[in-house]
Length: 186
Image (cartoon, rainbow, N blue to C red; front, side, top):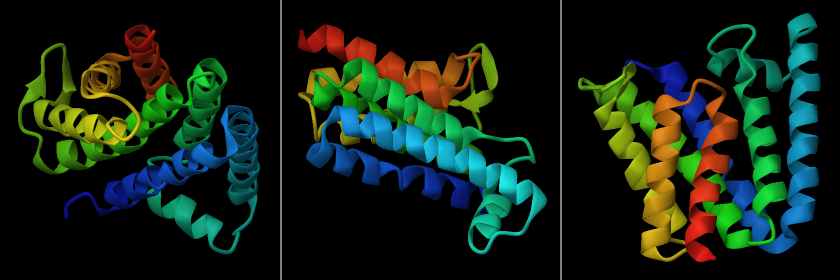
């Protein structure tokens, strides 16, 4: 695989599925608190890693970050916290939104980097292959929580946000997907 570092990074990203599983047991308010705690812990570890070598954490951070200032994992947890805060009254929509982020974003990067050869219109940095992987993975993941039409619509919304958002997609993907799916379930 040409993109070993990115592959490792996206596997860690996809491991966030553990949070979705926990949400089924804990509910939305504890998930907001847990996500915020993870973001805070991530920032503390990030800052310590800049000054010291931390067993295990430094290896993981240095093996998968794109540059020395990247904080995507912190935005990932903040996006999750916002998603459970905004949509937690419908835990199915909240969890489907997070799973669309977790699986869709990971697979789109892996497939897009490895196999992407057809650039998206208006964004040549992204590929049709990566977006198709996002759509498929997001849809299949969301099906565990919602009916097929809602899951597909959420996956399409997430895919479009991932492809065209000018800001941090770890926050905008679950919010965009959740807002669209919420319109369909109410």
